[in-house]
Amino acid sequence: MPIPTDHVGSPSGNKEEEAIKPAMSANDNDHRGLLPAGLADLLPPDAAREARAIDVAIERFAAFGYERVKPPVVEFEESLLGGPGAALASQTFRLMDPVSQRMMGVRPDMTLQVARIAVTRLKHVERPLRLSYGGNVIRVRGSALKPERQFAQVGAELFGVDTAEADAEAVLLTVDALRAIGVAELTVDLNLPTLVAAVAGGLKLSGEPLRRLRRALDRKDEAAIAKALDDRKAIDLFVGLLRAAGPADTAIAQLKKLKLPAAGTAEAARLAEVVTLVHRADPDLPLTLDPVEYRGLEYQTGVSFSVFALKGRQELARGGRYSAGYPEDGVSEPATGFTLYMDAVLASSDATSERPRLYLPFATAWSEAAHWQDKGYAVVRAVTAAADTRKEAKRLRCTHALIDGDAVPL
Image 1: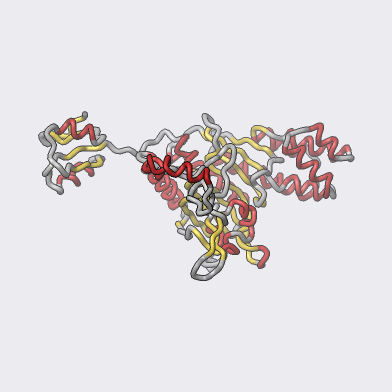
Image 2: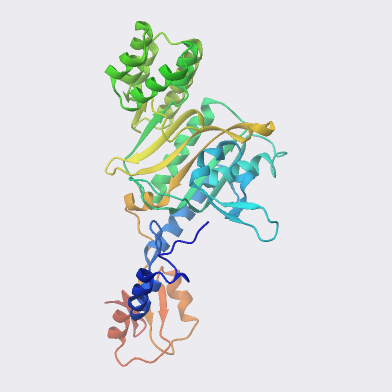
């Protein structure tokens, strides 16, 4: 892959590049701080907030029997991008492994790696298998709504069962973790990305009519649905699906009124069962439904969902049912799970991880630190003498200073 010339000098003698070199070297420190688009340093206190939020989420997963795994940052391309990973091939950075001389990919999503672990390293472990994970991923491009190319993911996956109970567990555990982190007033948007395909298959729709139908559904355009199809019953059916969006209970009732093909009826019944289970466990959790949405959910094979905070627009988490493994090799099993997007989660969280900072004057005994740390302070020990304890404590961004044996607020 060519190295972008706006990041390095060129031996070709390009005059424009040569012209900017003196400007760069004149302010070298600023230049060193520049990062590629979509990448950013996470600074205090945000780095600590993220780390603590990740710990909280992983602990909630552990409380429900999910065991943590830690996959590598890079792995062989054929493993990373096999099966459902093919959907993220265009978002994957690639590099040559100088040891094996094989192509490797930098992970664009950790779910793919956890699925690989489940169907290979842990294939003999009894099912259902519950795994959790946390780490950073990087993608080739951001999006208009999410320009970041590197971000932290935390999530959990349940392998080996295909039941509504498992689908509901994924939704409820997502909500549990977000609330534990400090995000309140959540709403869950449910999707069934396989429903349109199931209904279209039952009606023998394919080729160009199906493509036009998909475009019409994406635009939520009833008139375009009528133009895409010739059959009046099919038009009414897909318009009915389009209108069956909104609060989950109302949407489910509308779906039940539609005369869907057998496969579509089974899909809708599964979704209704999941809604019932989630409502039973958390009656006050707002649930909405869009039965024709599938963009961004192409590799999902059943009930899927996104979670938002009522006061924000960013997607906090996404999850749903998929086929884990490598169907092309005859190795796959049912799975469901979810991922929390930590940048969006922290932007919506009221929780803080900052502890009060206590300044310990020069020559304070090391053993004193533990006493104050047990009280919840982060201690900042002076390593040089200061004439004014209060002034020095404020300079070091401390909230308190140890004066005459007491933690004095500043």
